[in-house]
Amino acid sequence: MYQALYRKWRPRTFDDVVGQTHITDTLKRQVATGRLSHAYLFTGTRGTGKTTCAKILARAVNCEHPVDGNPCNTCDSCRGIENGSILDVLELDAASNNGVDQVRALRDEAVYTPAAVRKRVYIVDEVHMLSTAAFNALLKILEEPPAHLMFILATTELHKVPATIKSRCQQFSFQRILPGDIAQRLLYVAEREGIALTSGGAALLSRLADGGLRDALSLLDQCAGPAGPIGEQQVLDALGLAGNLETARLMGRVADRDAGGALEDIARLYGGGKDISAILGELASLTRDLLIRKTAPRSGGTLLNGGFDETTIRGLSEKFTAPRLVWMLTVLQAALAELPRSSNRRTDAELCLIRLCDERLDDSAGGLAARLDRVEAQLSSGVPLPKVKSENTCQIISGEKAEISISQSCMQGETPVDDARSQKDLPPWEAAGIPRVEPMAAASDPKPTADTVPPVSPVPGGDIWPALAAGLKNKVSRNAWSFLGNPSMVRGEYADGVLTLWADDELVKGVVSRPTVLEAVGTLAQSRLGHEVRVSVKVGRPESVAVHDKLDDLLAFGRRFDNITIKE
Ligand SMILES: [Zn+2]
Image 1 (tube, helix red, strand yellow):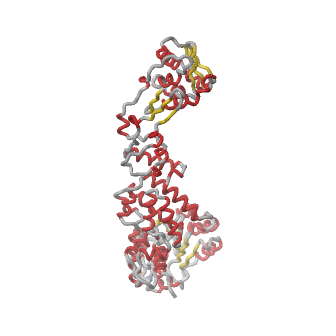
Image 2 (spheres, protein in one colour):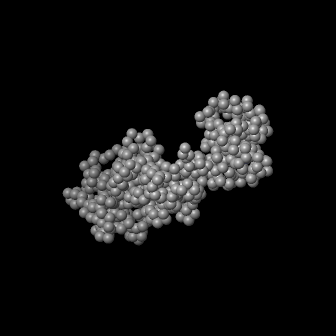
Image 3 (cartoon, protein in one colour):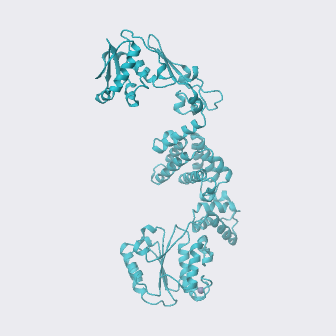
């Protein structure tokens, strides 16, 4: 009968256990010196050696000729325990056996001295699955354990084990096994089994096993076939995974924001029989690696999942910013969590990819942060300016017929010749023609200040307010100007020596009625008109303004920007 590799190569002594020397050394010393606890609690993720160590310990404490704390595996006790003929060592799987009856039965027989060996050993796997009543029964034994009794409890979920149990056990925490250690063990087993395994194949298998040696050996079992050596490609084919090269390629598409290419890639992989969630999972794993490379360029090497060569990782990580990677990881994790419940997994995966390629499609806070990050990166690297007439200003020209024309180059956001990107690649704020600002140039540009606004002459029936409001910008508090400069909040109307400020509501009226504001408005109006002006504030809107409203609003809006010159 064929025996699975992980069972066949299950370690039989503490020295054979891979990657848990901090535990096996302690246990060996305890066995050798006889300072044993009556209860052990082994914790850690699956496949890290908890049950294996429990079995070795059960043999070691009963072995007739222990070797340096290891069981000899040849004496009657060792062999009897191993083949299950000695009933004093009992394994109980709480996952399938969570009833209180079994634990009570244990308790009843625990009082008897062992029949064949020195110690009665109970190994309870997945102990967190026990019911509360069963835990209480177990606690009773642990409180007053007979000298011949030993409990070895194992769990993957320590937080579900009651504190009363934990406090009565010696606790050992099993670590995930490092990929390098797993790969080494895989190569050793493969050699003994006559399986031709390349180091690349071993490295990939160890990465996929996520720190569990049992999983790694099971995967090797799946890949081992009659034909040829097992390399990366054979592993990928056998396990139906998108594979390193494909994943790196897909990541490159995301980096280039090439949604079309990414969709083609995923369609080809899907057509080739690859699993959708495996593709996204690999992408998430690679994103994590890139993020680690970004965050800890030097020391992060050991933290990488591995499986990608240095050139690929470095090349890809240069294309991303850390905030974008964080956002991508969030999107991928969310998509992966949703996938099992999805009725159309492929569509969901495609949507996820499209969002990864274009953060504008994601209106979550994370998506906005990623977009902001992109803009910041563009600004800091000095985005090329569009060629705009007359020193980077938009011109709003209003003639007698109050026609407004915005210069053509402004509207289209004319791109310089050296800007290789085509118009369709531009984000909307660039394509819409809002002038892009070069940081250094902007700082040295002379800005038109409010004081340079020419004085207006009082034209009978003319509206002096927009120019007046613009002149107030630096003469009143920022708070007051936010109302005075906004025509939908405050409109000024001049007639017969009285300037009436029409406030939108009582709140606005309260702000602009402050003596300092009124004084500033009055002084400016007086200097512009050349005679004394009385200022009053009312709530409402002047009749005469309604006709010009839209044009005036636009003009006033234009005045709020320093780089827009208004010709009236
Ligand atoms: Zn022995």
